[in-house]
Length: 239
Length: 239
Image (cartoon, rainbow over all chains, first blue to last red; front, side, top):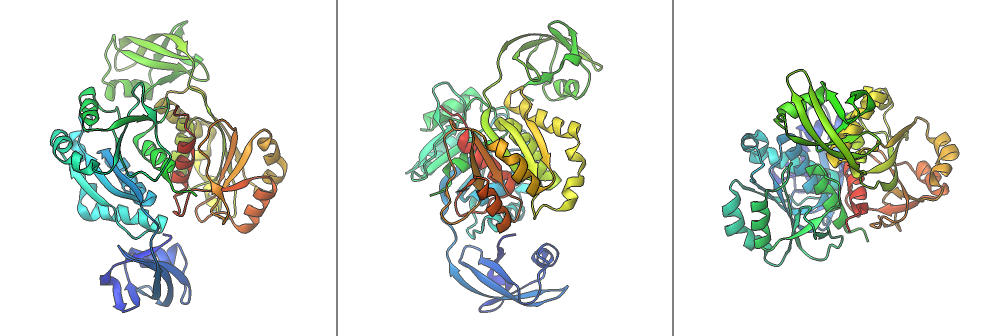
């Protein structure tokens, strides 16, 4: 936890929060924090700044703070990922928030197992917990939007065109003639990544017809989570 | 498993293998394979090719094959990672093999917990299992070399210089003035990545004195495993 995130509900004063949940445990057990220590804090969907622990016991911690810095810029990326198995979904939620993706769309595809849609990870509160873990890691406060698309065809035909407005659409799929996955970050992108086993030809055709260009990450077949972080890593604003 | 890897010990004929371990389970349960099916096979540290299942029951599968294609080129990268906690170590071993890293060095650093060096994951056979999982995923046969360096100072002073011969050495560490993490793949690289919490200043000084330049992945603090795959993703030979 590189940033302690809070909401209005945590406020015990205009510039003070009191926490008693897993954030308290983390302060005590991982940071081995003490009264007087400083800690980076951020208001969810707001500013970040420096906090100071003014009281701390086994029941609660009270932290005063001054918020003065904006969160880092988001990557101008809408990420589309075919719903992965739950273990991988948790990591992709965290990573999407960590790399600063603006929006994540989890969609159905022929090779997505039906049971994946039943996982409790998809509960709104649970997804939010994983997204917050990514924000805490990367020191960001803006929660990415997550959308679930349980039917491929209506999604691609009816809602994908609006997502593609003002964005270059890319499909990570190793077709002959695919161009290199990009490394610039100036162009807003929509990046689509298939399931383990890949998209079926019908899906590739539909996504291409919607305007997505195929791009390649080279000859190696990467695990879905590694394709996600490799693609996003290429786009990080490093200068 | 996108590639069934085998060794000489699996051969039941000059161009035939018989397997009865978890590879058999995977063929039956995941691939739902049947006699006559084709399957990609590769000899560890050798060539790859097409195999055909000639017999299959609950006890064993026999596969005939023709090996005709070399594995994909390795990334010209020696990856140095401060030993992470075991869960992350498993993923980093898999990912290093998957992205095609030539050599992985796991080294000690001030912020590496001593208990991490006790994990059974570091047993040679166990590490090899995770490396093979990465090779099976990416369709590669060449097992990366893994070296353990349990003491930082002797490693940096005595053995790092030889690793750096003919390589550009980079230290992923967010110092002011760090240049962008590279995206070219022509230059052989040595990439050093610190522990959770980062290198301490003494370590940064020593690594810089050994000739490593600091590079940055931008303002976000990435989890170690994501820093690894982001850095390697930037280097993938996509053209």
